[in-house]
Length: 165
Image (cartoon, rainbow, N blue to C red; front, side, top):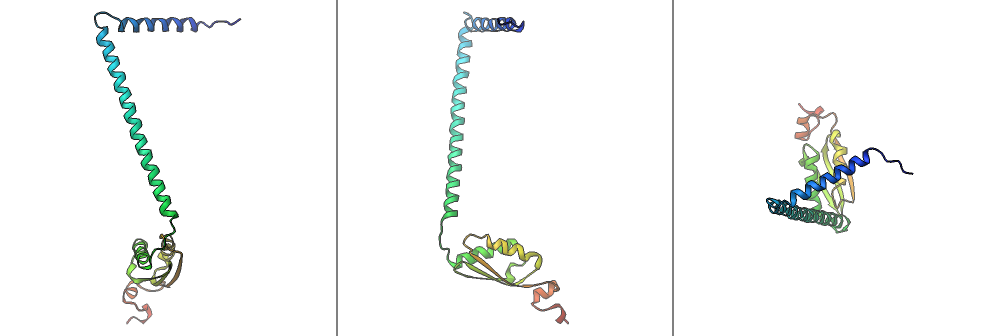
């Protein structure tokens, strides 16, 4: 025994009326041909748009995959970067990390970087960490002098603030 709810006959009636109206709408002898052609054209256009969208998303995903593979290859590639190129990379990184990158001298020997010069303490840790993140750097030796207690003009002149006249 399956009791029927009062909504089921109403739903069946509504579905039957909708199917009848659709059949009458499309099979009308006067305007049915035009309506059927319109529905057919819309269906073909929707299919074409769906295929174009799928192709575009596929090309996008393929490009993303190629980019990931290229990034992994560059990351995993254990190439020996020559010291001159590595020094240029380190100097470029220092340009983004410290206010006066020219006062920092960079020497590279086989991927081991030595930093010398005067760097404010506030920028020192960020500079060492940033240089360590440069591709090709194995170790970083920080031989920079502390600039606490020195004035900006003394740093520029290379002297000590206490010895300034």
